[in-house]
Image (cartoon, rainbow, N blue to C red; front, top):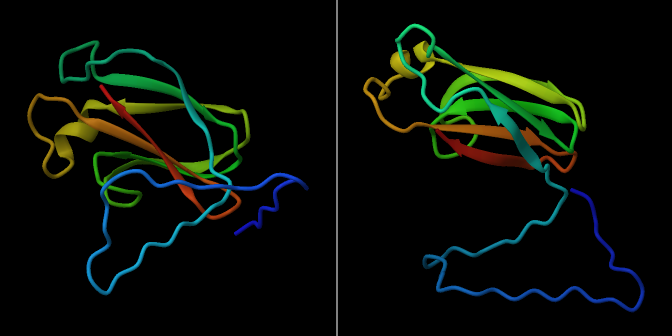
Length: 136
C-alpha cells in the first residue's frame, strides 16, 4: 500500500456521513490507495439472446491503470460472479470483451430473460480491485 503525504501546508480532512455502525466487537478500517478508473467506451448492443444476430455483445472498455483484470457476470465482488474473461491490461489500452449468450444461459442462476450485470475489475499497484458495474 502506498503512503500519501499531503503537500506542505495542506491537510487531509475526512468526514463520514451516514448511519453506519460497525457490529459489536468489529471496527471500521479505512484503506487509502491508488485505484483504477475504468471507462466503458462502447457496447454493440444491450440485448443478448439465442436469436440469430443477437448472440454477442462486445463491450469496449479501458483503464487508466495497468494491471490484472477480471470480467464477471453477476456476483457481489471479484471472484463471486461467473468468469467471462481474465487477463492483463495496459494503462490507456482498450479491450473488447465479448459477452456471449451462452455465458448467460449456462452459468448457474442465469437461465431466463432479464437484466444481468457485467462487472469489470482492475487491480491497481496498491493491490486494490476496482469494480465497474454495467447493467444491460
